[in-house]
View 1 (cartoon, rainbow, N blue to C red):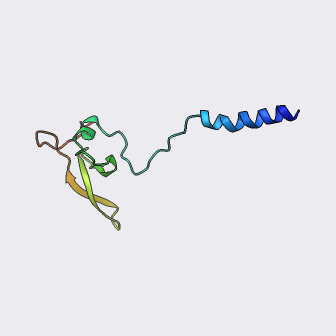
View 2: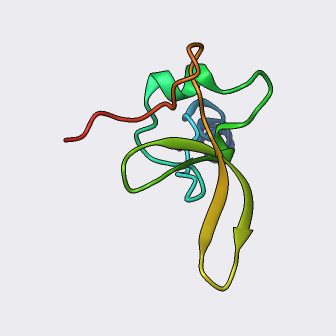
View 3: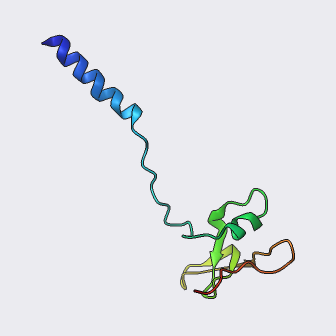
Length: 89
């Protein structure tokens, strides 16, 4: 009986090592970022700095205005100097 108990404890303990970790959703990261916007990010810039305006155009956040809950920044440009925007739906 003791052997069975030890095997049960070992099995339950090790099962946590086999199960994949559930990825928690990050509330600060934009949803549905276009591949074009991700590709246009300067090297080393984290996608957390991406902002998107009401027109679907992307920018890089520079500062937040806490009382207004608004992020301000600069336009995210592609290789041709055009701002990256999602197509209107």
